[in-house]
Image (cartoon, rainbow, N blue to C red; front, side, top):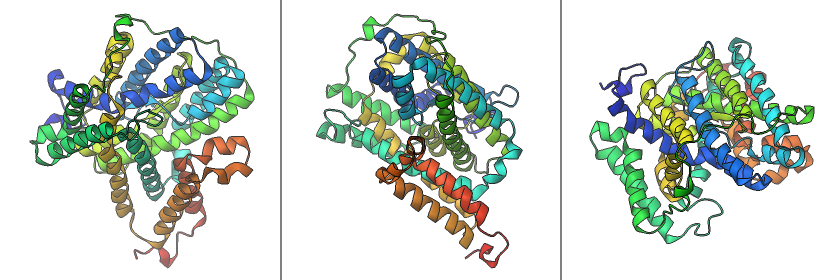
Length: 434
């Protein structure tokens, strides 16, 4: 078996690079998008915005390296790819618009430290997250990603050509190429099915005039990251609000870590790995705040990619992290990768997101189909997916509840699953498999 399918196998750089590059292409646009949206809404100067985009690529690379090669108890040693989180975006916009970017970054630094410290003591809280709760959260993550994949397939939410024939054609061709390579290609090529589909889709989009290289020539060849572009300010209300969302981010990281172990490694996640993954999420997010960026988190699309390709080698994924850092240090590289049309990414990722849902089914099967497990999974998913599809239901609650739960099905599913796990009896006949 090739070493790329082994966690600690030795892989030559020339062999590792295409697989690492595949991971970066799967998450690149999603990684820089939160910063672009935040800068646009808040009205940050274009020069500072460009610096923030550069910083977020470097931070994502550093976070990924820490997950792969831990520092003390920080990092899981698992092939997890980190990037800037969408979870914080709505709250970040509110805080930055009303209290300034300095207040937002101060809250990110403190909130990250809180989450990081939480990850250092997994024995104190992981008992609240047995395997059935983790499996249910993984399913919620998969279902929550499907609209993202569909929107990308159609051209990207808000795009002028959303749902156009061109987007349908390019997205469909990309998806079909990925599928053909995955099913019929040699084993090595199957592991690169996403990269091959993306290249074919990109070439097709280029031929159809859907790719623009405008502005790439204006980028400086080399640029160093900007440290503390905003002076930190600390306000209790902003800090508390951000900490609440950090708990949601920790939930997603726990789910992604569980899904990766189940889908790519074929085993359950350990308490140590769960805590170390959350610790990395938190402490690196604090560093992210020092560089003017919002918090980072594990990227579910890369978990899906690992589940499909079975490429779990840490060094291989580390080459992807190195590419991210180079994109930050050499802006033209990042600018070229940012020209990939959304429909191409949608064609690549739609099946990856489905694989996360499939991984959750395997996790549930290992837990057993008892009545208790059925209630935890079915009721949590029904409430989480159902209620957040009608977010106006939450309008009677305070703003912080709306921010954390109204449109975040993963947070609602996690909360329901934890509560049900605590209140449902464990020692009845219902625990027997149905």
